[in-house]
Image 1: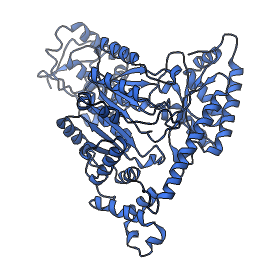
Image 2: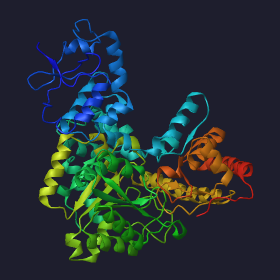
Image 3: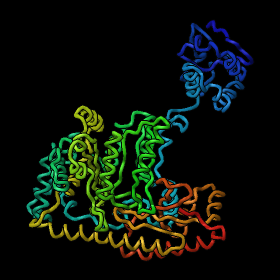
Image 4: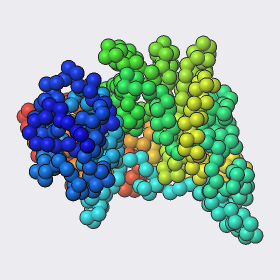
Length: 588
């Protein structure tokens, strides 16, 4: 084979093929090459390329029977070597070809989906709602402990009954042969039958056929009509995309906005971790702006300006701003004045506004009813109403439907250039179609039974009953938390969550550190073990330094709420008594 050694030291040791020429790359790095060789790697040079000494398929099977120059001891040494930190550090900062060498060396023992080989952005993404607490709760449930999963806004899992009319319509769409049964009218009301026939006519072959990548045109027209009634301004169905829940739409838009690590997205803190996870996944930078707990989680426009200034100082280009209205996890409802401030700020800073409005039906006070960002924008008139870019999101998972598992959602685009809309359509097309049953649920949400329809009274009774009960539960939970020692909680004005502050004694903070836990994680784990109540620590949503919270849904059944809050109070007060001392506790 006429191979010759380059700067050879020690054992003959040639292992892998390198298709990258190294002759020029090694110039100026002789000392590093020597050090690599001193740990018993031989570089075999032949016509400017590194070559295998034996067939790769046998290497992949750890079959070195054909090796001409490799001893068994050298084989062991190689695998020890390329896993060592010292060896990897030697390759940092070397030219491209050297890094390719490191990559090929890694192939000897690492596979593409080994943990140290997967995309770093995947590892950076964190989603606390299904994190450590949830996993521990699932383990305890398997062991037979009764768990109350309040960690995620999942209404039906906590006992909320599905509305009758949407389920009747979807049932008929899923089993269209029922429509041909002469007795179908004895089981299903006439308006549900008519709606099912209408929705089936929108499809190209029933619910089992792909729809348009943007969603069924007929359903998009119904969404546009709903938006028009809500805002008082017409909506274009061509600018409405149906999605598998609002989360899928959020991720699609963030992927479109984020070009790299230098692009920043303003996100409220505390925030729903979908945003931090997605921004990490797409390689962008989260730019936090803090909500003011003492002002009922209000937004201070000066905080926004400071966040943007700090990001720009770091070289980050802020490109978009997220608002969650009503808030998750904080439960606040934004006023018209707040929304105007936000819209003006985005206009001045040339930001696209992402309006997460999935809880718009979940409002539990009358002082600040929900009003959409789009309505306020259009009310403001030109030039801002014609120029500010806005994406609005909604879903069937929240509100009185609570159909989380059906994965129905939409986003609407306002003032987005047609060329950009075409690119968003292209990306949507990659997934072929949003799930069609979810689209049917969306149609039922935005186009429910009307006065005079057979199903109207039942629909109104069921939907009002759910929202009235949620309002009661919001008060019960807030009052329950505020009755506990070292716990303060703003009222849940909207959405589905309470976010109480837990004023942890210093001894508890020290105990958490000793256990290797973040303090609020430590508290929530203790709560879970003692009561079976599964919550999410505030650190999973972001919070100010030295302040601790937890998030819980207000979704447990109304009749179960007193016992749950009593159980929480009993645990919390005993916890505080155990850890409290004269040092005091963390404060806002």
